[in-house]
Length: 103
Image 1 (cartoon, one colour):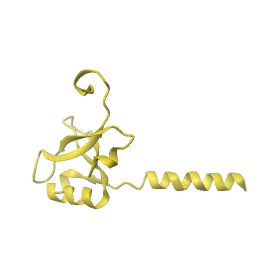
Image 2: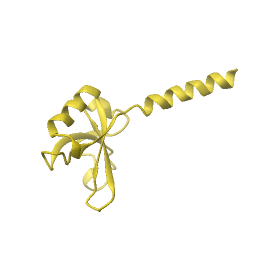
Image 3: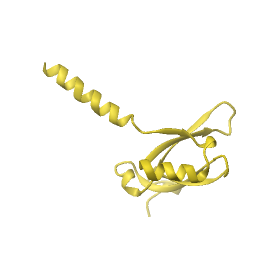
Image 4: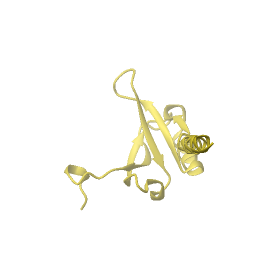
């Protein structure tokens, strides 16, 4: 019985972690991307890589609270149907070396 309860708890936590929505940014306008981010807090955007046949994935966030424990909020861009450089916010880790170093 204890094992069943433990497995049920793990399954519930796993389901919550996998519940983040994923969208193809090239099939959305930049405004639609921003609307989804505002509605859901964070989403995963997928878009074609510069290398044919490969897809890129980017977790976008609405504010810095979504980055707690996952780095600091930073700027990035993704291609959308109306803007090849739609500005978004992501979480990025600082390594302490090179261009990502902490100041």
